[in-house]
Structure formats: C-alpha cells, structure tokens
Image 1 (cartoon, helix red, strand yellow):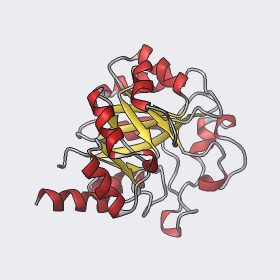
Image 2 (cartoon, one colour):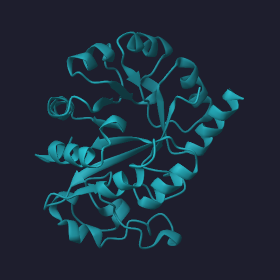
Image 3 (cartoon, one colour):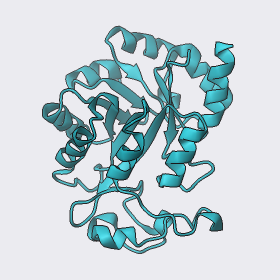
Image 4 (cartoon, helix red, strand yellow):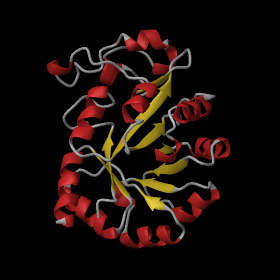
Length: 245
C-alpha cells in the first residue's frame, strides 16, 4: 500500500513557507516519498523555484520573476510572509532541490510554470539539470501547458510527464496518450474510481492534487491512484502506515 507516492505539495507547505528548502526538508521529515514544486526562469535564465509569476505574495516584492536577475531574486525574503521564524528563508534554485534529493529515492514532480509566460528554453534547461544530477528515473515533469510537455517528451523520452488539468477533460487517458504522457495530474474532484481504472488499462497513472482531507485521501487510495499531492504529507503517511498495519 505504501507504493502510493506521497507528494509534499510545494514541500510541507501547511507548516513551512511553500517552495523553500525549509519546506522541502520538512516534507521529507514528515514522511513524504515525493516532492512537488514549481519552476520559472529568471531574466538571466536561472531555474528559480516559486509558484506565482508575481513576487508579491511569497517574496514581498513588486514585479515578476521573469523580469529579475537571479542575483536579485536570491536577495529576497521568501519566509517572512509565512511567519517570523522563517525570516530570511530565500527562493531556492532547482539545483539545490536536486542536490537534496539526489542520494534519496524520493520522486520529484517539477511543474513548469509556463502557462502565462512561455519561458522559451526552460524545458531544455530543466532537463539538462535533471540529467546532470542523474535524476531522470525519479522525475515527473508536469505543466498546464501541454505543448511544453510534448516538447519535453521529444527532448527526453526517458523522463516521465504528467498533464495538469482542473476538470472536465473527456477521457483524459486517451488524450495523455496523444502526448506520450505518463500521468494525469488532475484536480482531485475530477478523479473517479472508474477513471483511475480506465487510465490504468492504458498505463496512465493518476497523481491528483491538492488533497488535504483524510477522508478524500482514503477514497483516492481505495480508487487506486498512484500518488497523491498534499500539503499534509504527515497525514497521508499516517493513513498509509495504518492501512499497512
């Protein structure tokens, strides 16, 4: 039963500022077997870990990630918004997270945040970094930009891809096959047991997001999903351990 991947959403984002090294380390401490994170490009091409295109919410700065150099971004405080105990926590680069995970068996789900700003060349940079760290077998690349995922697959057929979508996609497992995608990263309300079964027949795994309610976690485990993305990896770890017992 513990073969279900327990993805800590942006790290342990219920108890730490999301997408910081503190959140990733805490996620692992709390029993995550996977990490979900978001990547964008700085003005000078650095692979910056941050969810929003705007810096306002989590880094307290004006402007967009794409318009700042990496050195400017690394000066920002990405922890204080969450709580004074995290003051001075900064935006990580993807290489720091790859370095944290390279000697573990953790699965890393990298969401390419290229739906609003396209970030030409980001796919190549992310894939090169993943390969440099020998992580190709343990990475899933996801995006709401499915053109980007098709491009990733053409560049790196050995790296898994997961199509992100919210709801209402008709027979998404068939659609995933047209992209050679390996997984369906669906908003969890768009996941029904019969969908999981049909997808599995085509070899497509479901990794629903963002599942924080224990009952919903149990329902999805019963449905046979391959992974669950959650802000509470400790809750999911507890459920999985209890089921094993």
